Length: 97
Image (cartoon, rainbow, N blue to C red; front, side, top):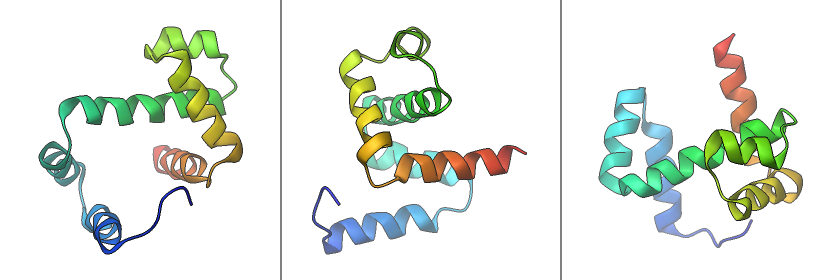
């Protein structure tokens, strides 16, 4: 894990897990994050989806508007991270079906 768990981060995770609907998610994110932060996180998730599906950096950059630095960081997380992106993408894929 890249950061140390604290009571505050534990509480944040529990807060996310307590949300039951997309509307609740939007309400919480709007209170806890800036609009720019929300869009940045959403963009990273879309980058992760593209890369996991085999898209090139160039196609991902064109589609998402993400910088090469952001794409590189997400790619490193996909390849060497904790598996969070892949877990979430897998679960989102299951819900689509």
